[in-house]
Image (cartoon, rainbow, N blue to C red; front, side, top):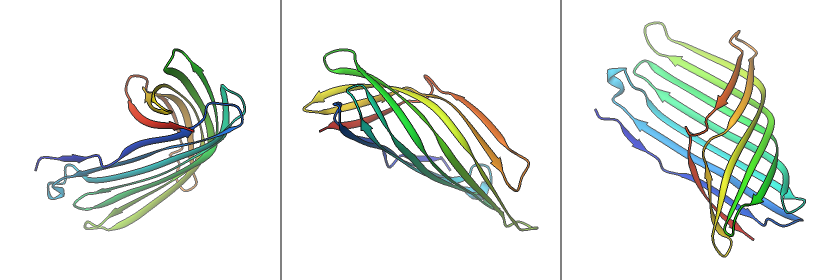
Length: 196
């Protein structure tokens, strides 16, 4: 069966006023679903969801400091079982923005904080089992983007990737991880913004 891909929502919303003493509220929402013929046992059926809100205080015309969080979950179903992953993070961010033309601005977010992950695998085959591992760690990353002011405070945000480092230390497994991510030119997102 031919795989089907459905992207229900990938929305980035931002409400901001790039002036001293204002509040910035923004976030990302994403959903991904892939249906496969699991009877073949080759490709899983997948569902992924993520939500990442941010709230910040703009203490001058170029700088914003605030808190960020993220929650995501995914589920993959196979003929013999399923795999689930739940992730949560909370931390702080610092943003520097600079006008580069009449309707353009460039900005970069530096974010850091705590995150955890829980992964559960169920196998219902001949010897059924359930395995769960939990991990905690920290992350740090830089995300540059471009803002295009369309009309009356409405605009678009363009992101072409990020650079980051994260760790996860698992309490019941020896598979601790350290990840370095460099995704410039490999990731792309477009968001809608409103300045008040």
